[in-house]
Length: 231
Image 1: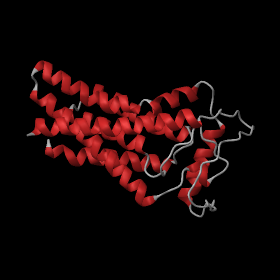
Image 2: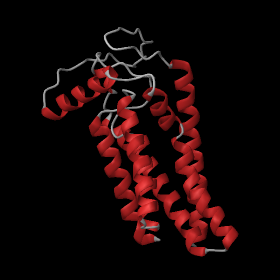
Image 3: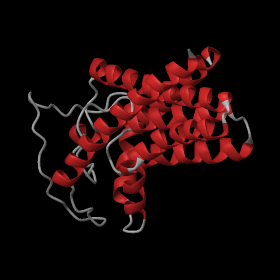
Image 4: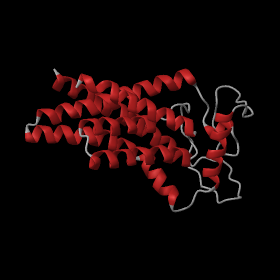
């Protein structure tokens, strides 16, 4: 039964990640902009909202913190760091799919049932996190940082709303599930380093607030922890 669930979860994860990957790539190549140097002005292709967008004044500590952080990161981008951060964001799916795929293939080759079940656990956690993130985005509808604050110049213009960060939620889900399945420091450290770097890249690129990233990390990690008893 668990093997069947593993196979179904893995297929669902692949479909969801491919859908996101090609959608993001289309937007990235269609709307990639030149990263401006400090103290310069860049003209971006304006997004096409269905309704008029009002830019409210930051009226609470959290929003002010979010704004200050994102503006600071945008003003201090470097030609060396930007390609690295873009790479992390563009290639998220390879980690989310590659980890459970590797476990599944390894489990089949070695006839290790526990490894196959761990593949199902990681794939299920990431797939559920993906769906939960999508639903929360629709419910919350938080505007992207560059829509709310015109001082923020994004490296590219993504779709959907801002909270929570989907890249962060799925990467932390994968990292937490893998770490729970194999609680060794040499698994935990690189897993969360990758997830943390992915979350940071979303802020660096100007497409997510710190609280979006924090929310994504909590959602992804929480999903993985809650799902572990089922496996």
